[in-house]
Amino acid sequence: QVQLAESGGGSVQAGGSLRLSCAASGGDPHRGRSMTWFRQAAGQERDGVAFFYTSDSSTRYSDSVAGRATISQDVAKNTVYLQLNSLKAEDTATYYCAAVSGWLGDWWTHSSAYVSWGQGTQVSVSS
Image 1 (cartoon, one colour):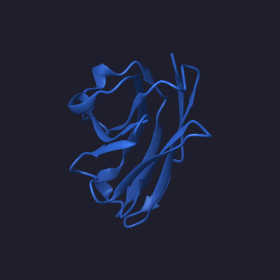
Image 2: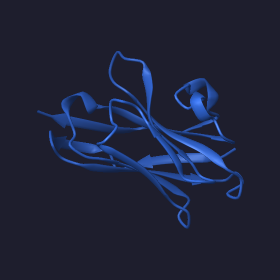
Image 3: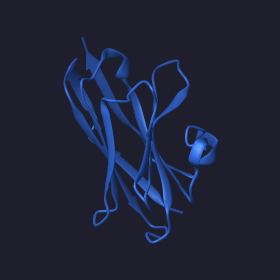
């Protein structure tokens, strides 16, 4: 089972940018993996915001971040990144990285489909 560690969160002003990192260790790096960034604001459900499939670099985004976010990977570092631009106050949340072997497709937003989770990194956006 892969272990995940997020980093890169912080406090920024509205309109700013952040790049979150999710470093993976363990597991089989040669096997395709669905990796997703979720976020959870206080008192809210955990929502998927960006998806990446490591075998073919397929991506998907939630409507809430589409056009402002880019998910990518550095294969050599076994790390997936989430670049967030034009940040808004409503982007404030704890961001979690999740992973599971194989292709999830349309199930990518279902948190129950993932086996591995990171500890989360806090993003706070002030208006």
